[in-house]
Length: 178
Image 1 (cartoon, rainbow, N blue to C red):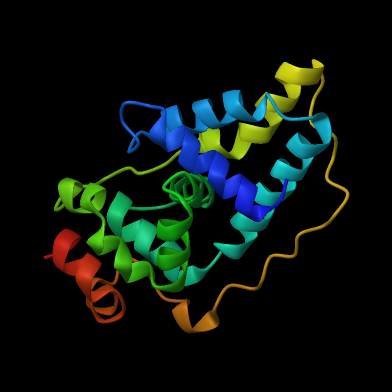
Image 2 (image 1 turned 90 degrees about the vertical axis):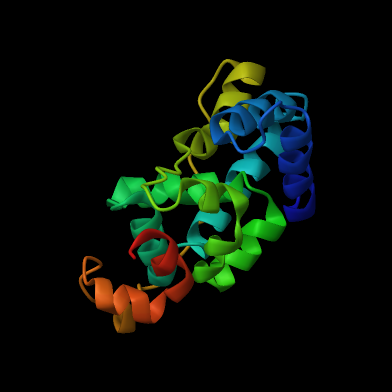
């Protein structure tokens, strides 16, 4: 499995459920679809998930998750990034590049001005659940390390600083902080 196939799996999952905005349903369907693949492809899908989690480990995105969800712990940021992955490749890439672009998503606008609580822990286990379904065993430990970049020190400020959030994430701040 390669990145393009993985994103195809996510898109197929989104098309096959009633509410593609429901991350848990998308992740569950993705696990079920992935179960039809070989053990090696399932392991490769797990590696791709890890790569996407590393790619999205960015302080500006964390700040955006903090605004949208009304706070965001370490685990909460993992789950938010899981939710972002099951939104599909186009949304994922656009929002990782410009976290303030979350303000353009209908699901975000629908939750404004309250807290959205957009999280999907189940995304983190798509490959593990498929592997267990196919083999009856746990997913093997990862053999290829995925380096996480250091968080951007320019974004090292108190995320409760509304003025700073308004300056850095103006569209999200307009929806959630005004």
